[in-house]
Image 1 (cartoon, rainbow, N blue to C red):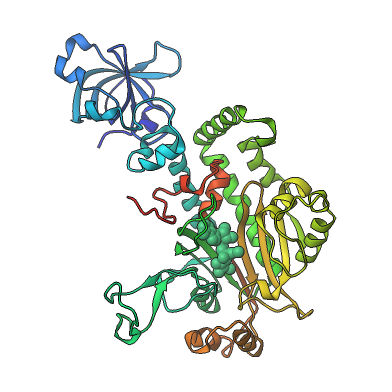
Image 2 (tube, helix red, strand yellow):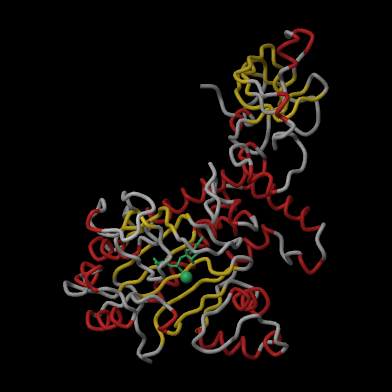
Length: 471
Ligand code: 4AD
Ligand code: MG
């Protein structure tokens, strides 16, 4: 295998090398901009067209894949430190001249919508190359953080017979013939109704009650028909679960973890982040002033790593919202009242206008949160916590878990959670139950924050959303 461009750019010239990649542009019958995806930068490959077969030169159009061999030298031009003076070019695969016009490989500005429609090619652009390299680094950092801190990676099932969040927004899994009404579940593959998991939490709890500190990191599925810029039907969730821990340990872990991940990106994804930062600044300069971000991408990231997150209770959040200007001026679409779930407009106000930094809200009313959350002594709130980020809203949702068997059993009744579906979950409260807590981080929400991309469809390689499962 040949050297990757990321390494070639760090090589001291002169040196004989071969390099493979895709043509990004070909100018003046002389300069090929060659990219192999290993980094944002392309390598300048200089050819002497007169010394190469005419047929070959005429096929060096955008998107073609080539092997170039020659001498790496210090660059004569500005804009790059080294360039390759190629003596030999081999074309692996041509790029269809007739059809190129229709594709996003054409080097000009394309809308994000158009890039999404060509999801099979969009990773070849600078923008999506940067996004998906960062996505890799974030996934790695997640595993590294947990490994370095004594957590074990647990693989929880994707097909489940329980709906952890109780929200009824699941995708069914079945081998029964399509379109049959009156489905006899006992004849189905698993002998009972099953669906794609919405969360690995319940199984992660079982593991935490044996291994101490664990995490899951896998795909989760929700059939919410909300076509927003922050929801996917298939998304990746990171769910740590810690035994012998309370809600404050949980919040501390969430804050430290997020800061670690953002710092990791700042240190290890410099070139791609700078590119995304500058791109966003340029895009925003076209917008009216009130639509622009007050801070740039890099400033927002530094703001998060340098500040303590604000911690308030749900009750305090409601008070702030009730006293707020937009509430008095009736600018909120949804009602603010104790007992009602916060809407994204409320979260936005708290994070972006009031505190101007990440906010952790704890102790939500019991009725608006999941059955497994620990009932507080006041009898009406639970030890739940959401971490809200600027521009994103809820990035983490978690809680201390109800570890008392009798209370949990009662809550199952109140929330209509059938005991026989989660008998195994209840059993853990009978044998050595302990205070424990955990949370779920939406991986794509993190990716939105770290890349500055505004639509969640642009931070996952192949998004699944209502009416869209292409590629
Ligand atoms: O708040 P959620 O629903 O929490 C749980 O599922 C818990 N079982 C987690 C736990 O305690 N182990 O989801 C967790 C996070 C949200 O804060 C959000 O970041 C993300 O998952 N999320 C989504 N991301 C993309 N598309 C969706 N449809 C999402 N729904 C939730
Ligand atoms: Mg939530």
